[in-house]
Amino acid sequence: MLLTPAHRRLRGHPPSEGGRAAAAIFAVETYWPAADGWSAARIEEELVVTADGCEVITKFPAEDLLIAGRRYHAAGGPLPALRDAQSHRDTSYGTA
Image (cartoon, rainbow, N blue to C red; front, side):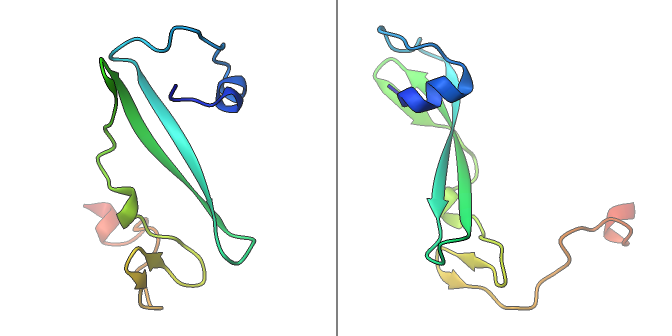
């Protein structure tokens, strides 16, 4: 099973005895609490059901995702405290 009973209940999927059909696509969201006890991340992976299991089809590797907060962190550790603007709206980048 790709989804836990809680996921099925929350997402409106009825329980199934026979599994899922091949080629069905699901988005599975994982909750990762941070060590500070307050922050957290939700990482979504897309999966496709195959004849012998499932395959992750997410294009961006979750290991490379940034965690925002007072500082950005990646799998390799903290990134520099100075960072680019979050949005390019109303800048020369946003008018191209």
